[in-house]
Image 1 (cartoon, rainbow, N blue to C red):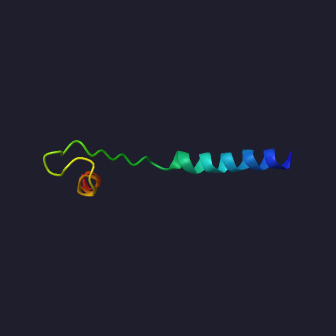
Image 2: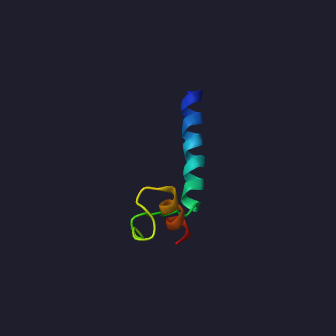
Image 3: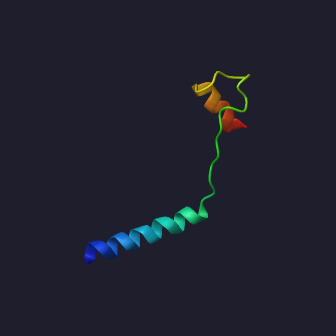
Length: 49
């Protein structure tokens, strides 16, 4: 019983924080002419754009 209560409580807390956070969208294929695909420079470039 206590485990179920803790599980439900923790899921409610996590979901409350998740609803307030905006998603971070990162794509790496849009600038394939500027950096090789699936490399760290490509991911860094995508996060800057």
